[in-house]
Length: 461
Image 1 (cartoon, rainbow, N blue to C red):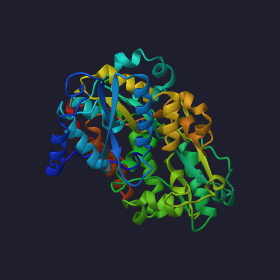
Image 2 (cartoon, rainbow, N blue to C red):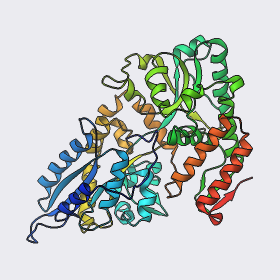
Image 3 (tube, rainbow, N blue to C red):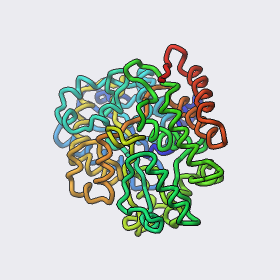
Image 4 (spheres, rainbow, N blue to C red):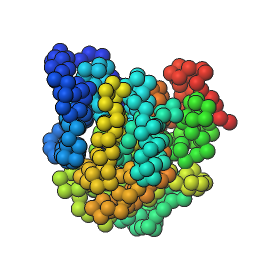
């Protein structure tokens, strides 16, 4: 699953049919022993399953199930795919985690939700387990360890991630007199290239930066945070544990958005494209393959659209499209920025067999097992050593995408973030429609004070 446009709402109403299903599951729930109190311990694993096959999670866990049960007869692995789309998956999993009789032992968690689920008491802190697992300490990128950490405790092991970068069309760059091995060093370099395309390649949209409310998390993550995290400022101060509601970096990021969408000198898509919930599909399935977009700040998952069997097969993409790292605002250290999301496996707080659940987690995340899954599911590997696995390394773009993980950042995994993200989108949309970055930031400040509380905010000058 990608985090390109995702907003989470947990709905209080669940169908009677699903409630009945949970009652029927109760006898098997949270990984107890067999019904007569003897025999192997059952560890249940819950994950999402949706859409047409192949089901990569199912394939992965079936392989792990065979390995675990052949090497450890005291553990029986029970797979519990939750057949639901993304929003319903969160809702159903939330309901299952409330009761010891229905809570799985191992659960697939969107890293986006770890903070709220930990706050709800659903997840087990894994610090003692992870501190003694040398593979984890040595092989998982620091950013991949931080993304599952909330309030000083780690609650999950990332099984795959994504990164964000700049895509550019080499043919359009050549027509614009730009280098086809382009690597901008500052934000100004990006705007210079976009203006060159506008001046020299008519009929082409110079660049895309996701922005505004309709594109939801894609706007805040691919758009705004790729800018903000390249400044001296941040969205959340982890040292003071406060949200930064006003800063020069925030205003500069909004000013970049305003420059791209200035109607008198437009560099981005027109509003009928940009302010549409289908903007990502239009960009990746139509404008890029048709040679109508020069620059796109987007994600590592985009080639899946162009692959054989994808929504818009385009074999020529490897020759046509270039990949560049997103620079920091002025090229200051660490010089580049990326944002990562992705999924992790956690242990339910309700699990009666946490030690055995962690044993299973270690088997699932061995270099061979995780590499097979990441290759099949087109994930960016969170383990450093998977980068050397031939099947992974040979996938187009993977070597570059993986190189971004070392400096990738992530969204603050706190319960307030989804609401704050909406306010980021709103501020972006306001500057697209003519409001000054300063006024848009002022409105954002007031909204976040209402969301987080006066004691949980700070300003940077």
